[in-house]
Image (tube, rainbow, N blue to C red; front, top):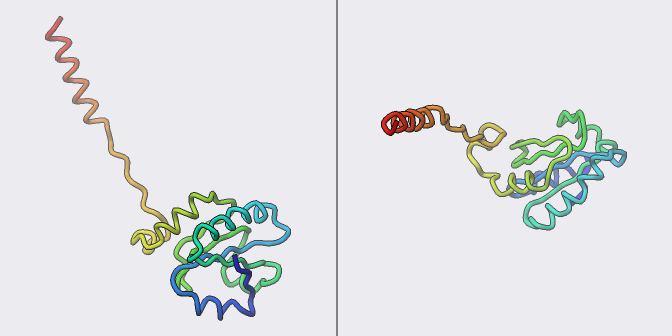
Length: 140
């Protein structure tokens, strides 16, 4: 993880190639400290995926620009565009899944992952029930 602030933010973001993660936090934030090992693991397992850390106390103007209301807040971005946002304690698997699926068209368009619709099993179960009932009537 690389720490960035208001002074070097534009340079780092403008020279970043591909998607990257911005993590907003504070040294006085307990959940931010809890996320630190998660983000370190994420960075070590994805060495080609930049993870940047911004302290909201040191860079309040960046926090205001991004509308940070609570920390930790993480933005997956590309070319200064926010792709998806996570707020609060976020499991490693969710962050890793996002990295692995960062080019998902639904994610890029809607800022969230598509949720599969569950199929309604009522009609198939009703048909099976009717068949079983008919067989029961036949054999009685």
